[in-house]
Image 1 (tube, one colour):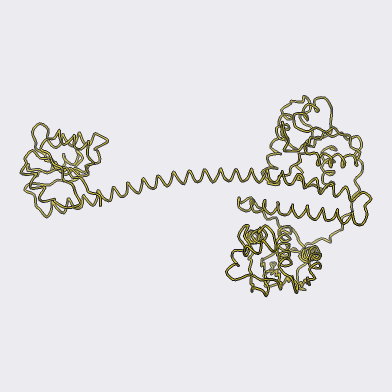
Image 2 (cartoon, rainbow, N blue to C red):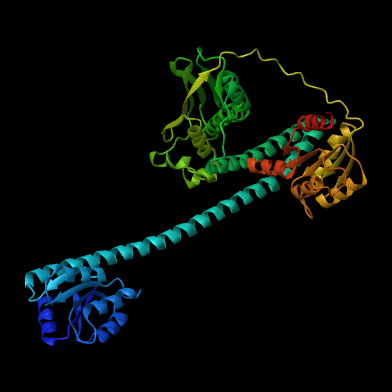
Length: 528
């Protein structure tokens, strides 16, 4: 235990000796002096906690000494106890307390009272010092927390930038592959070539799915993920997912059975895209980890209250199952049941993590029951509002994309594959066009020529699309500040789209895109 320094100041040595004898103990250091000026020096040089000062002394009385101590920042917090033989009149006690003392002791000293009072002040000092120590620790922790918060925010910004860049860098070539595969399909192909093009599309969309999974997790973590409920036909969604996954189940010679409750409502309010995502992940996983037997998809009504229905979606397989100790682990990001799972079956370990997060966001519950080597059952349960005013769905008539004659477009795109793809698509619509590779060239071309619209990639060398749009809107191509501009972006975060609109873009198309979507947007912004 740290020793407390107590200073005794008295002009009579016999009084000092008496006080020393009274206060002697192991947890304090007693420092003494008969000279007030010496007392000031000691207070400056040593960490004095308590000072017991005689009031009547030659040269400088106790009141004057305390006034000097209290006026100095280094000594102002010393606890002062006056020791006096003069009158016990109240005015002297008030004067002493006004000077800054915490107590008065009168000579002759009562040993028990003196010892008890000094004990209480020593404890007070210890408490104060403990509080000061804790405060310093708290300040240090606070600084560390602020530093950690800054680092976390910096990390979040780096992560978001990485995701945006990764999304763009990977989605851009995928956009090219999918687009060219679609163009190839329109040419004369042998059956074998047609099959290869189909495989190309499946592989590209599979890779796109992995990227979207990563971005979905990022959106969920940052709280930017939204659930959009619209009238949804549960029967139709379940059948569509099962039909889509029937090919891999047939390849593995597995039964893929769907059982739908006959009383299922025709339509409920649900986020069909996210429900589709949950079912795709659960059924896809079941097929992946099942070698013999099959997979059963079951949808049943558990409860009904007023206009709301509690639905349970179950995916039951006869696969490898999961050991009890690994059940929680499978829902962690980038985790699988064990190392051998990744080696034998592959995959990113993102699927079930996304399912768990989506289930939570939708307000539902996700359960798993599994027995190793016997199979697993994954169940998603959620309340849905029944949508009664379901209109009879009309089959959309496929519109023929008529030529866009007398339409002149400036295309700014640096990626050679995407450039080739856009040129081919625009040529098929008989669009007149000029093509440049960066924002700087786009502004120069715009100064020289008149266009109905600009198609601008977001990420380009020399000058990116957003910088070019800002300069166009500021009048760098005089008289053409209001030309419609559509940006292509391979980044799919909402913030990227908001940034493009804020920069002055009229519209944003995410890569990969459907030609029909591009056609519709060109029409919207060139006729009006």
